[in-house]
Length: 125
Image: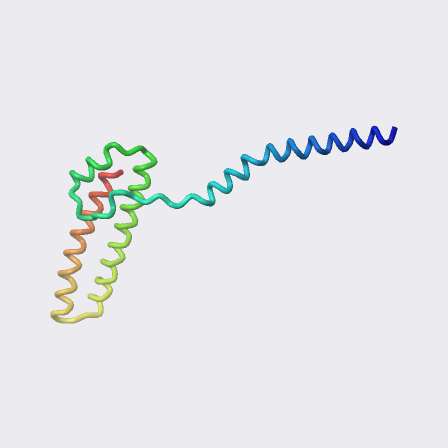
């Protein structure tokens, strides 16, 4: 009698473990897949001087997810450029004379480029 009970309990335990393992396999697979995914790269940010018209044609066939990647890419380009503008402005604070004039002219040029980058980000958005 005890032997029959032992075999029944062992079968129940084995079935329980197998069902649990089969249930957990997809979960562990999804976790492993998400860890291996690399961040997708934007396709249109390699040429920040691209015309707005060309950019509009390039992003037209993209999906919502693709556009999100492109917008993040343009945001990073803009962020780096604004950092450069800030550095030149900080240098201009400490400069005097002709050097200050040259730096401020450079800031004006960089601000114009910044506006162009914002326009491109708007096209993607």
